[in-house]
Image 1 (cartoon, rainbow, N blue to C red):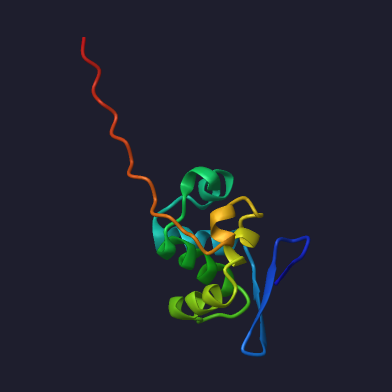
Image 2 (image 1 turned 90 degrees about the horizontal axis):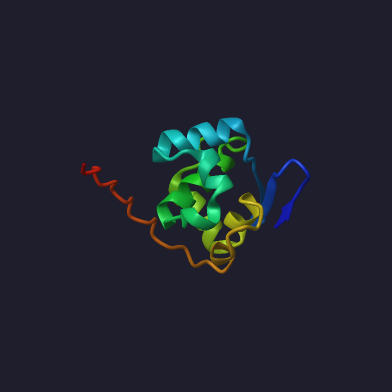
Amino acid sequence: MTKNAKGEVTTVFEGKTYILVPDFNALCDFEAATGLNAISVFNNVSEAHLSASTARALVQACLNQRHPGELASFAGKLMDNDPSIIADLLGGQEADASAGKLVDPPTPKRKSAKRH
């Protein structure tokens, strides 16, 4: 796996090279698929703790920029083949992802109403 200056991540699977592009369109596709704010995920990855399905949605969104039509299941196969894909896409900030250890997202905390 390699990462270039644009943030594109290249990986090889079964003899074919795939390029994952974390551009604005990929971020929009990720948001549409997950309902999450992509900028917040990238900026706060250490707090976000990606679930497996969220991580796979990110890989698929980035993959489809250069390889349109690839399914989520194929994105999962790329991740199985090279677990460092998530860490590379996120700038190496998520150490657990590079080891293939993804965690469930935290449960949102409800704000309690102020009592007077």
